[in-house]
Length: 434
Ligand code: NAP
Image 1 (cartoon, helix red, strand yellow):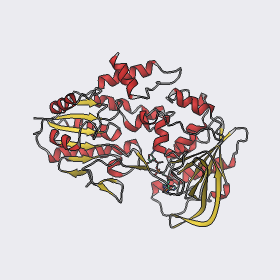
Image 2 (tube, protein in one colour):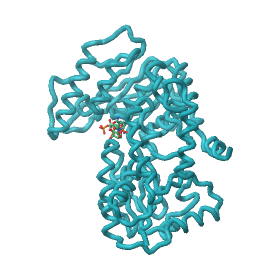
Image 3 (cartoon, helix red, strand yellow):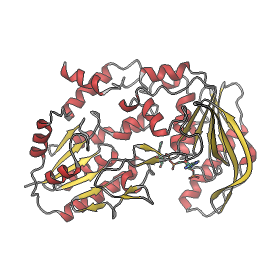
Image 4 (cartoon, helix red, strand yellow):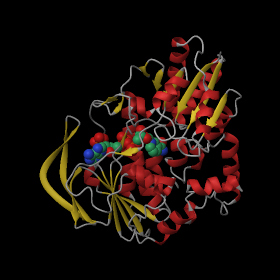
């Protein structure tokens, strides 16, 4: 019997496990399960809508999805439609590739106020994730504060200040594009608790901020050191040198004609969200960096704003019956092995870092471990899984169904854009029903 494998999650980490299993040419039957009808996880719902070239990696995932030993089951939710114990009884191996869908909290007074929206939620909204269709973030504000100095912070800042012309080739859903275009947002403050050298931006993303049509990058030159000091690997040092060079260029060429601004604000740690029920501002403590860590200086300042977006990392959604490594915030695992027959890959394994390709070695590891641990399939796999779903009237979405949804999205695209996304599950199911 083939080894039956259920991969829960169809983002990059799930697809790289499937790809490695397919390439192994072992006798496997791979079922990819996703709670959304649409596949591709953060490629669809995380990668910025104006970075379409990055999204093209789905072409490779599609080749895997169309392999004869792979089946896709969208609109099937672990915990709602099937339990982990039922999957265990059905499949020889289960791979948890569920990522980190939750927002990390600032954990400061006021962070529950209306108008504090974590990056997973905000990015999900502008990417048309059905969970966040009704978010309606307060963009009726001149100032937005984004906390964090990573690529997610930069994505958010950029999407908020690009002109409609710059977004023509993006796939922002119409209601989102309308909301952003009519918003009076003129200043985005991107605030790092450490300095420019410690910032986690990759250089391509940072450099892009110097070429925006109507937004200038504003930096206090006093925050920029002459050179990169500190204990870095060669690779990290080169990246930081490039970033410092880009930031110096921005600081040296303030472009007053541009009407919007992204303020690169360093050495400031958030201490309190200000306002009543709704956000009216945020208080920071100035910091200095000692031994790589941010230390408070006892000096404070406020930024008035109507929206605060912490882009400070992500959290696991716990799965009942699966242990969490509290310290690392991941699923407890030994290089991908969770327990007998259960494996983990991607952010749920390592934490929320790394680019898309970082998931590829994880996929190979998980596939190798499965094939090392399990020589032959003994569990019923796909047929039993489908029988359970049928019994429960679960309308699962096959890859062919997804291709229909995709075709309709492409057909509905406004000029220049690759697609107009369906942003509710019902709309997707209606399309298929008709
Ligand atoms: P990240 O790169 O880890 O950045 C998180 C930022 O949040 C850091 O600046 C961190 O500061 C800050 N932070 C954490 N806790 C904080 C707190 N309590 N108060 C204030 N600041 C806090 O994470 P990310 O931006 O979410 O990105 C996740 C991963 O996806 C990264 O590996 C990223 O490169 C990748 N990604 C890549 C792209 C791309 O390639 N275009 C796009 C998006 C995301 P410290 O450094 O001081 O901890």
